[in-house]
Amino acid sequence: MLESDFGVFAYNGCRAADILLRIEYGLLAKPQRGKLIFDMDKNWRLFRHGNKILIEYFYRRSLRTIDRFIEFDDNLTRGVITVNQEVAFIKKKSAEERGRYVINASKKDFLQHLIIWHLAGRYRGLLGHGAFIKDKGRGFLFIGKSESGKTTMARLYSIDQDAEIYNDDRAIIRFNRKNAYFYNVPWHGDYFSGNSEFLSGDKIRIDKIFFISHAKINIGRRISGIEAAYKIFHNAFLPFWDKEGLCNTLDVCKKLVKNVPCYKLGFVNKKSIVEYIRKMD
Image (cartoon, rainbow, N blue to C red; front, side, top):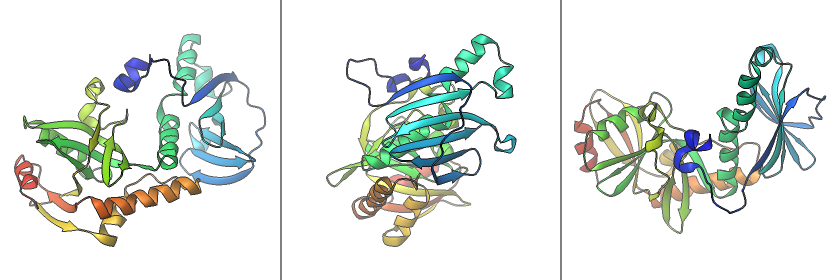
């Protein structure tokens, strides 16, 4: 099951797991929430109670019914997930469907994203919105929010035999001395829909960063300093609930601006953008 969901990211070796989760299905006891640290208004909240992190997840916030309650240690590496058997849409499922839902509760949707989001910050990395493409041996990171053109850029590059597409939606960035590296994740955009087995788990140096948007003509310019830092910061998943992780993320933003050439790029949905990018300084 893991292999089908995560492909190259599934690990079947002998090393001890970095993250251990226990899943339970049953009634939720009245939780001890502690201090509210972060509230994602749409569907989850994070609390701190002593040395524990507690998360409430709502299938629909408007229903005010907790779908899952998760109790983690401070590092989000050991946890217990309780799936609420009283949630109406779960009760309607067959025993087999409920079993599948309970298993998926630990490895799909927001939870696995939250754990990697948190650990990226703790391990001096950054998780952000970005498509990564290797063009003639050089690593290009295309950063932008939804609808900015990341998947479009991946499709335009896919026509070129000198290009390799690694992801069209998410990227982890970490440094090794002065070099920034792209690390892949199991989440992707429409380019890989139905083809996630083609995702690569390779680590690749980032040679240039482009902040992209759709435009009427291909137009780009080099940017630096505060302008570049703001755009990286604006497109990163920031672990606001974790001081150490947040400081590390800000440090990665600073290093990227200092060590990797950054460009603002508007582009037209035509293959000509590939040659345009290759000719940019």
